Length: 262
Image (cartoon, rainbow, N blue to C red; front, top):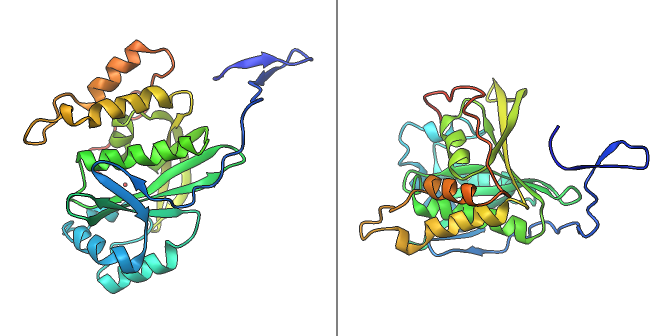
């Protein structure tokens, strides 16, 4: 049993009363501005060409393995997918724009948006090779989490294929808590998918937001752009300083597979 419980009039344990909680509004697609990236609603005419060119640098197409769509052989096919699949409110797709080049280098979205529960998921992540493993990629996630909690959501989720080692490692690096594996959760591209769940909740976010802010500080990078202190190291320090947030990892649940993409 997890969480805080209180006895009701029958002596039964019940959850905390959320007397001051208000149902948040759904995200509207406002532009999210960072120092390194800008997130704006994904539009085929504005972003497809830049994204397709960046994705083409993934010459063997491994970035698409765990996504339910792609790879796209032509710009026309990619543009059509954006026009037909990415114009709704749930999922709500964003293009990730690198400020230095003003090029669209990645895609992310909000999905499973449940204002009445205060829950929202970040997913459909597809970072092209120039965006992968960069401070800009981390800042993009920070902007998405920040906006969700500023809107009043209580819980932000991250899910991926249980065999997707890079995505699981990214969730762990970002400080999200492992919650379990849903076996045979769905079918993707004709194959079984077990889905692993991670999350961060509102009570944990202030401490984790501080971790992101400290890591993204320009002073944490040398002249060549190399980090001085890793995000994980800062996270461990903050975790030892506060009792409000200790991310649960999945290291004792199942060995991470050696290969994978999100």
